[in-house]
Length: 245
Length: 245
Image (tube, rainbow over all chains, first blue to last red; front, side, top):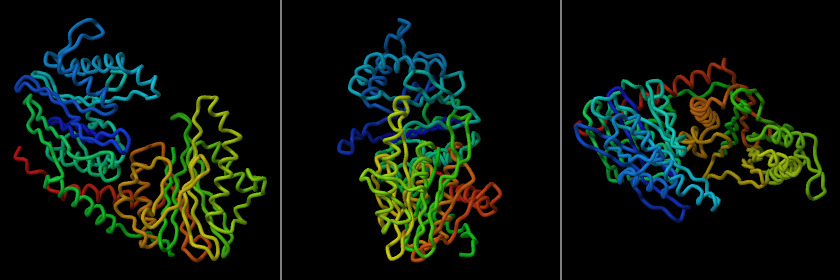
């Protein structure tokens, strides 16, 4: 399983991904799910993947090496003029992999699955965050819905629903992403550390932060303790019902 | 969609269910999903249902009217000698309904779905909480895992994971069930009010409380406000990361 969350803020973009992959409970491994394309000053793009690992690795490889799309033209993320065009290139790569491998999976009784988050900025254009589906189509985060999630999304959604606002500072938003991840880790053991995090400040076209958080990370450990303790404390401050039992 | 949660505590049982039913977003209705069988001093049983409404109504009707099971014998929840036997009767009713209607649903391309929580106590026997599956089989809550959920279970699980302990007082546990329900209502609009709640104090074989909570319920409204506010406050007290950005 996977959990990735992307935040689209006035100040920039935050993307956070876990790194656990499993094929049954007896086949657990660590694979990074956050991939970056960066040319400082020109562009900074980050892609998070969820779903079938073979499919998502194939998509990332096509995007790294360049590929010929459905339209017979070469595609290269480093040449995309806008984030919309970049999302279209990722979508084309997904469709190309679906064409190659999708039918084979179905013949084995497996439903091909793949979803992605693409966030970033290209010089002279606004920053943007997209979510892509297996059909290669995509939606964009907006001020009304400033976060997008893929994978095991439900455990970590309540805190996002309550806290994320487009005008949050980037570090505070990153903290919220980590709390959301903590709730997911706590409730689903198929989502696991280490975590990969990127922060992109809008207007800079380079990653302000690229960080891997392991079990040893003191800040994430402190969040895990403080959040659990804080939840229990808030729960304690709410009066019990006065139902006269 | 549905969300029901059952708590198995040293002091007794708490069961909470929403009441929203939907067949597509343009067909929303209210149907109670919590059903009780009570003979004060002898037994108090409560059943929560999730899944296909036609199937769950049929099961409840069989249980109300009595029915002939696979073994050719009559079954009556009011005659069960133990909670284990009662769970077996509910399981037989599920299988009977599956036999009648399951194939017809499959022929329409619909996967039959049904799950239930059964909690209660029969005189002279311990109180118990069971979760039943579409196959008619069931598991029992224990001290290690003192809560069971059916339906849209993920949004409301993190608070249960962190707070529920077998030695909690009943009212405090009911408060936790309401917080868990609030997180679910907040994140999935196909789960909705009113809520049905029962509390059974062990040893009494009658419901200490049977309550319907509507939009107007002052206590539930206060929980919704206090919990959201408390979460944001805890979030605010956790220091932002010191990553020198």
